[in-house]
Length: 200
Image (tube, rainbow, N blue to C red; front, side):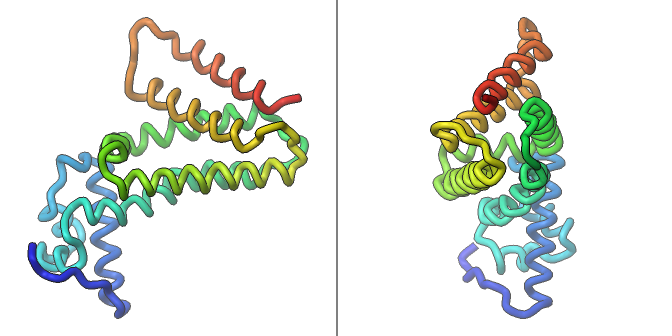
């Protein structure tokens, strides 16, 4: 828009910016990133469009802040579950709950996830955010498993590989709907594969 984007310092300005980000998160989640415009975000936030452009260059700029909320809302439950594990780890139960959590995340945030996933291939900032998230989750789980006495060669690699499988299966289960696939059977295969990676 040509005007300088400012970083709010006063409490009222910070609250206003947070309202814009929250409105963006809600609309991107409900109707999708590409079906939302800045005027709709402004209306949902209860501010003028000019105010929005005072804090953000464009809709994509809002999306980068929305990513922070998405990460917390979507992945906190899974991380909390991992953090509450106790030894000895029941991997069959744990992996079943991780799969349930991942499927629910993909269902709940289908609209925003679709946009973020496609943008991660073409937008460096979005991609870097996802890589940072992957790093954080992988290392958090690796540290927790080590604390619980899980001793497996290449533990970090096993965890990262498992995350790729969970992500891929969740996409398949929620979005793809191939008529020739028995998804209950596929889930059992995924679960057994992941359990075998960690159980002695």
